[in-house]
Amino acid sequence: MRFCVAIDGPAAAGKGTIGRAVAARFGFAHLDTGLLYRAVAAKGGDPVAVAEGLQETDLLRDDLRSMAVGQAASRVAAIPQVRAALVAFQRRIARAEGGAVLDGRDIGTVICPQAEVKLYVTASPQVRAHRRWLEVGGDRGQVLAEVIERDQRDMGRAAAPLKAAPDAVLLDTSVLTVDVAIAAAIDVVERRMRELG
Ligand code: DC
Image (cartoon, rainbow, N blue to C red; front, side, top):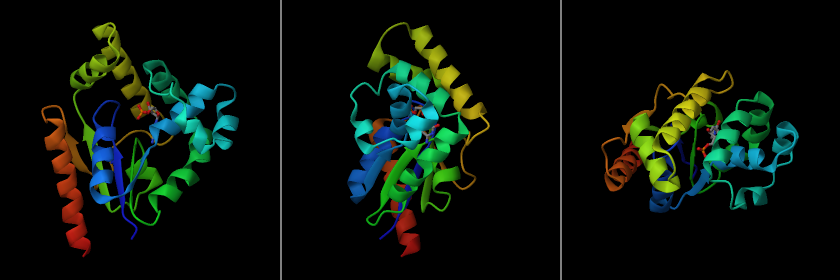
């Protein structure tokens, strides 16, 4: 069975948490595609060459989750050749037998426009910055500024900018608990499965 759940949205909206939970519920594979861009940025050197030679083991580095790597990832992600080099790997997982959940910025629009389910998970910049601040600490104003800067870069770039696919289901997690947001996402997937028989 092939079934792709595409989850897009800005940083710290809850895509990863929802994606992991949906994948676990249905026994699907899960790929956090941000890790690909983070791994390219963290390796340093020529980002296009690094993206072209990226190995799955590069995704296992334990320094990929920092704010600094997130910002650097957002910069390399604006380079069209970097994005192009990472398409095939993502599509292979998206169409894998057994179902898959991919979360990122362009999954429903570019990587898997035929996805059976598309979710656009978002929350206000203030709520997302607060969540990030709880994880990383530091100066609250600085964390909010970085969230807004990353939104602007990811939404404003020419190559595969972050935007909701026209047929995506919008999930605003600003005022939802984690459990309610996960239940809503699972409900969307179950309804679609019933529709497809
Ligand atoms: O989801 P994340 O915060 O780990 O992503 C890091 C950066 O990678 C993000 O700011 C933009 C880029 N990215 C992207 O351009 N396309 C994706 N599908 C996933 C991430």
